[in-house]
Length: 182
Image 1: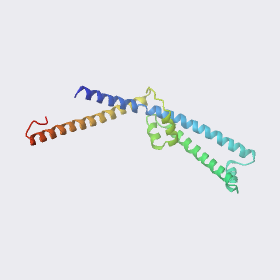
Image 2 (image 1 turned 180 degrees about the vertical axis):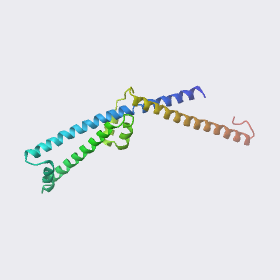
Image 3 (image 1 turned 120 degrees about the vertical axis):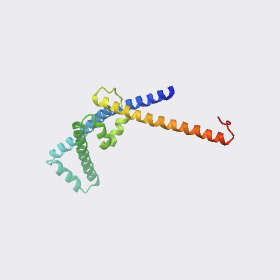
Image 4 (image 1 turned 90 degrees about the horizontal axis):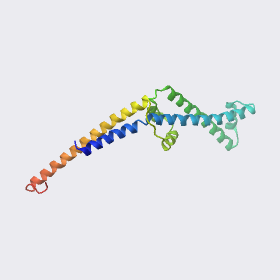
């Protein structure tokens, strides 16, 4: 294997290791944003509940008042609060699931069932970190293994393409009377 090919293979392996090692840090930053979203929804829901209680209503009765209103704006406000309550429950369940999961599995859970808006925001502001945890080390090893496979496949494809190219040149050269294209 030539020196250039060895360097390229090493770069692929190391790059994959470094890239994949960031999965636990991404999961950590996702969990932080998820908790922040839950905190904000909690403030909104508590304010709604306080206003409802001040009027002598519980949450469901207040939502029913909105739903039965003749005013379209109030019905829309009630629908918005229902969506906020549903989102709060969905995000809280997700945070509970992530907290209960092994740090090694959290990145997989996020990519399988994560909130797309939060994932987008985490990605936009992602800050890489040195993987100093067992999960980071395992993900780095997985990345190195993946990079090794990718490098091996690419190396094999390049070797086969070069071999095919040489054989094609020889065939053409032999048809033209030898040596013209060598």
